[in-house]
Length: 191
Image 1 (tube, helix red, strand yellow):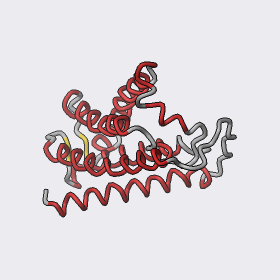
Image 2 (cartoon, rainbow, N blue to C red):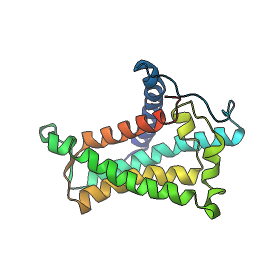
Image 3 (cartoon, rainbow, N blue to C red):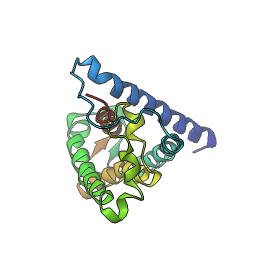
């Protein structure tokens, strides 16, 4: 990849992140859901650390997109051609990708709540007791936690392609990332 390609990938990654944030933030109101009452203390203003961690998370998205694309281009079970689009290459892999992802993410989240680790990494994310800003609150995490969570997508794709031998179309990866991002953001709103 040229430098221009990398700048374009980073820019598209950040733009996609902003689009996912907008969709996540608007989804509850659009579907006319009743807001969840605020029970914890809302973090009304981001601290300098919050702003720094959010910025680092956004910047880390670029390299993640780069490495995901590098892997995808070299994976023999990843399909790119429009004539390879089918239910079995787009929709069938999605539950498998989410199950593998959630297995490892749940394990990671559990491990981050271990008392000896919690204060160093995950505690920062819980300074917001009543999330409301979609992905802004979702990505307000320690940089180590963000990297582990993001690269879990790549790990899940690797396992599904290499271990489970699923043939997965590139469109399925886009759906996997978009749906996962929207749901993660929506989980950090009042809906």
